[in-house]
Amino acid sequence: MYLFDIDGTLLNATDAVHYFAFCDALTELAGRSLNLDGVTAQGNVDNGILRDALALAGVPDHQWRPRLPEMQQRMCAFVTRDQADLRLQVLPQVPEVLDHLRAKGAILGVATGNLEGIGRVKLAHAGLLDRFHFGGYSNAHEFRHEVFKSAVETARSLTRADASICVVGDTPADVRAAHSNGLDIIAVATGIFPLATLQAESPTRAVSSLAELLIHPL
Ligand SMILES: [Mg+2]
Image (cartoon, rainbow, N blue to C red; front, side, top):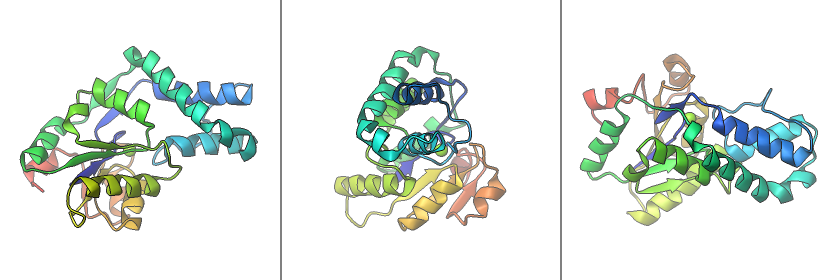
């Protein structure tokens, strides 16, 4: 069973639709123009990015936490509305790798920091959504290790409780979150992090591209 991150692992977005959805929700909440300057988005999850941006802007927790569902809805509606502007590059051999794993009988899930309404739109646009048996999204979580834990619970409910599970992700945060859940992880250097940076986190395996998984199969 495999759990795939989306951004930097399955695809890279060259548009800013998701980014502008954050800015729109933050600006609406704060009543003044806010963006993600100074916020770490890579390896973060959508709720965590909102939390970090609002903390940086000095908006206290009690002002935004009750309105988090409203911000999530606004972001998903924004991306749905502007989805024609998405520019998604499916990373090399990703469809082939997913088809290869499915042909071997593997259960494939998503474990992503994206909100469900955003992650599903991206996967559908990239032509990948139908290749997954289930999705683990970040709506109820603020940290990546929580997203993975929840995705694992879903995954185990679909097969055997003792089935082996391997995460595939592109950031040091993915490797750490997999380790903290006791999961194997394949780190792939198709996001912004070079192979050596990922290797330094001691993943189960590190590859420069998922295409390598077809040459040296799992
Ligand atoms: Mg990623």
